[in-house]
Image (cartoon, rainbow, N blue to C red; front, side):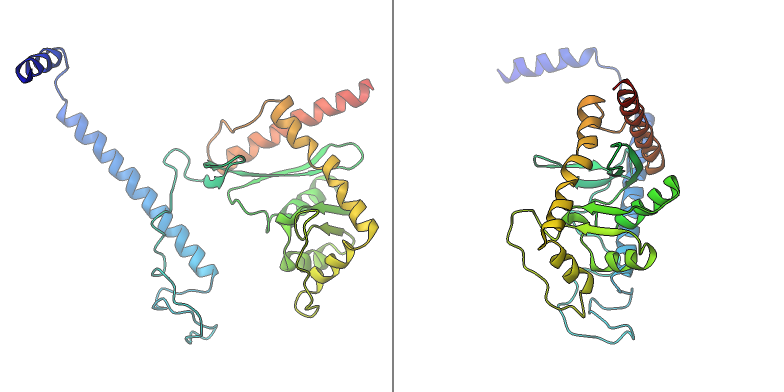
Amino acid sequence: MLVQKAVNTDEAEKNEPDLDIHAELERRQVQLAAIAAAKARLEERQRQSDTQRGRSPDDERKPRDKDGQPKGGKPYQRDFGVPATKAQDSFTDPESRIMKRAGGGYDYAYNAQTAVDEKAHIIVAAEVVNTSSDVRQLSMVLAAVKAYTGSAAGQVLADAGYRSEAVMAELARTQPDTELVIALGREGKVLVKPRDAKRYPHTVAMAAKFETEQGKLDYRKRKWIGEPPNGWIKNVLGFRQFSMRGLKKVKAEFKLVCLALNLRRMGAMQAG
């Protein structure tokens, strides 16, 4: 049996082309260069993240105060700028990021943001970021609304993913005429209400707003204002993934898709 296997293998290899050693070495060099570039991107990303957290290259993994003196707290698990072993990077689109997929699992993806007009259901601002968190995106979207429409939003309805004391404080300062209605958790769930009004004044005020009938009624409008365009983009236009690579191109593609949906919506309004 072993002899016959060897004969069959020899026969199968007769028609195989000879290995091009030079081409194979070149292919492997390209792969190694791509891996090295991905590693460098992960390390640079981690350095930026660590810097934002207040870390420094010489902190010896110890949390430090603004003066560089050690303070209490658990030591950091890794040296400054060293990514976690599970950190990943895309070879085909380095600007995308790993994000959780609806229904389970993870994909390299982008995070699309839209602002929708209450009366016409037209998308008045469309942006894309390469971070999965929505927390810091509200200021960007509202700035886009003001730039594109010429006026600030009168009222903003946002889900709990946008909850942030710092963002609410910023918007109270930069867009004082805009009323914020931001959920502090899932609707229908018992929430832990903040009590420290000195430390979290905007969050405490928002919790009080959601205890009123008007606050609850206002927030429920989000279901039929902000959510339908997302469904229309996916199910009417059939747009479920980007065909472009790179954040700049992805932004342009998404804006084009939103423009197409707006034109469709405007046509339906005129026909009606």
